[in-house]
Amino acid sequence: MTSSLILAFGDEKHQLSAAGSGTDAVRFFRNLEDVEVKAQEKLGVQPGTYDLYDRYGMIRHQKDLMRALETSVAGEVLLELREHLHFTRIRGVEAEEKVLAHKLDKLERSLQDSEDRTTAKIEEAKADLTSNIVKVDNRISNDVIPLIETAQRDLLRQKQQTNAVQEKLGKINLTEIADMCEKAESLREELRAALDRMDKLDEEWTADKSQINETTLNVEKAMAELRRYMEGKIQVCIQTDADLREDQQKLDERVELLVDEVKLLEQKHKRLEKKCEGTLEESEELRTTLGRLREDNAYVKKETGQVRTRVHCIEGTSTERWQDFSNIQDDVQFFRHWHRLAKGSDVQLSTDFAVATGRGFLAATGMVLTNDEGLVVGDGPCRRFGTPGQWSSYFEVQLDEVCAAPESAGGLYVGIALQSAQEIAAHPKHEFDGWLIGGHAKALVCRAGTGGGVAIVADGALPATWAQAAKDPATKESAAKAVQMLRNALPMRAKGECRELRSMWASHKLHTSDKIGVLFRFNREGGARMKITVNGDLTATHDFAEAPPADAVGYLTPVVRLAGTGKSARLLPGLHPPARIIAG
Image (cartoon, rainbow, N blue to C red; front, top):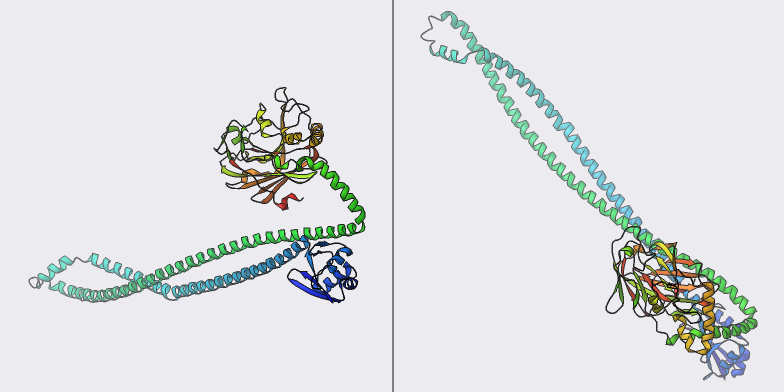
């Protein structure tokens, strides 16, 4: 009987055969290292990057391999290689990096081709325009200017001759000459002596008149021809100038369009460059994580026995410490809407208590200290995510309306409170212990007073966020110890306090319909970190040094202060935090 071992990795399968029964096959594949060597030779899968599974579960030891070989069906043993998640992600990132590099090269080539075409068109248009200008200048210099100069000289001579004729005509009285001609016959005898002089004068006048007439006719003809020529040239110049202006305007429009296209390409290139930088950074982080995993894997292999013992001990201890919440999580009523009483006097709630709108003047100017304007609280606690000592609370709100506000007013504040909505509503000043971030790049650390000398939660009693633990005697004692630890970290005080700190998130830049996510995590030894996401993208992170340890805190309540540009907010229940923002 021949026993076949089939190794399956994704869509690839490779069959290995060994003669004999299942026991012979076990001798053939002496240990898991032989299987790993065959998997590397046949499928190209590196050891340590996958786990082996048969139809009964994961194969960890030689006994599991023997079980798989001895329980084969029809002599075939199917072993499935399931690659670890981070190696799958690394391959995905490498493939995406290749695609992005290909797109980047394509965009660079397109940009270079566009620049070359633009430069060629500009140079061609510039050469045509220069050639036309040179032609027009040459035509004006060679044809128009000489004709104008000749016409000016002829006009000057004509003016001189006309002046001389006018002077002569001014000296002669034509009327008297006409009368003398009419009376010449009757006065011939009396003026015989003067006829000789008049004949000479008449001859001279006739000669000059004919010459003047000829000159005047020639000048008029020349002026008419010059006028027609100049009018034609001027029309040509006007038409040429109009054509040049039209060509220049079209060229300018084309250049502007090309400049806009270049700007758009530059913007796309910058966005792609930013994405590539982010991808490279993530790739470097994955390489660092891979190195750490390799070191941890080597350490775990060396200390397997001790690690198992410690894990069993830690699991038992963690179960005892976490049972307060793992047992009561299903009985807790998490937030669904805004609380109808735990709010500022200026806040108006919608009919379904899902949307809160601030109407206060002080909050609209960014003033949220010493008053409760714009305060709105969820009607239940946030759900907890994580493990004991390393858990986080998360909620989201959507900005439904923004309004104009002074530049220094900022926007809304988001955060959490240690007290429940009922406890905050019962306080005369609606004070609470909590942490918020927002406004004009500010962070708020809030401490509640005793409310006029009377504590909202009496000594020895559990706060509302630990109330579910009081139902079970097994969890009540551990909850009381946690509350005592909380009292030691945050002792009760007679007067409330709210301190402002600098932060890196300015919420006045939010827009309508933006979704703001708030993830708050207490550290195991004290201190806390708040992460803000806008539309799923991590926007800001702020650390609060003065915060109790994680084991001292129960459930947290979502709190929002409607201030500045943030006028109306909607509470979004039942959402889970993105996995990428929980880590870190």
